[in-house]
Amino acid sequence: MKQTLDISQLNRNLIKMHPEARVLVQPLPDCPQIQLALLDPAPMKQRPFKEEEIKTIQEYPAYWAFCWGSGQALAAQILDTPGLVAGKTVMDFGAGSGVVAIAACLAGAREVIACYIDPDALLACQINARINQVNFRTHDDLFSFDEPLDMLIAADVLYDRNNLPLLEQFNAMTTEVLVADSRVKVFDFPPYQRFSSRECGTVPDLDETRDFNKITQVTHKTENTALLPV
Figure (spheres, one colour):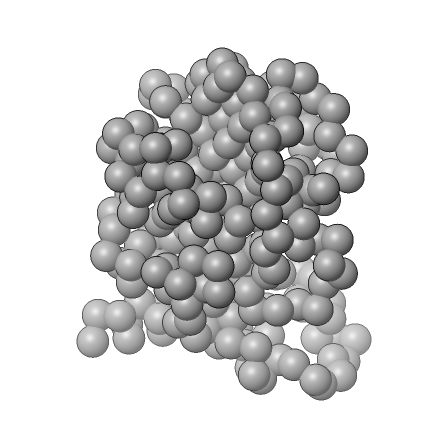
């Protein structure tokens, strides 16, 4: 009953994007141990959208209703290598659906803070945490957070080059940073360095170009790690 109530809250928010949009709890292909309440693609696929529908979607894109490829890649990396976060206080910046925060909890982080400016996204994070039977705090403003962190992690926050100064902000907040992004094609921002690569898609599938599914990990030890495109 509680989960049904939670899902109905998300559906009420999602209709701001489209009246037929709804969420569906679904496992992730690259992190099957995690289930998220994400956009149900069935009512939205293989149909033309009217101009006013497109405008509404653009005004409220509901980023929290998708598990973006970089987020899934970062979550998979954490689950594969729990020592990255185990025993640490971790902030997931730009948390979206909360997938990376959930992975950090499952991997044994001491404390996790999901940070996002959108209150609807923070609600989705909280509901997805309940679905996966984990607990973390939420916070809505990176620049007002003044508690000590062992690590800051972020996925898909560098889609706009105007966001690149965030890399310096991350370094100012903690000695360990883990970032995932598929939009930056040439990554040359010391002290971040290449580490490894992984390919993950967005859930539900948006039929994105495969270039957006290629995420490369780069690392720097103070320690700063980023997942970035090949």
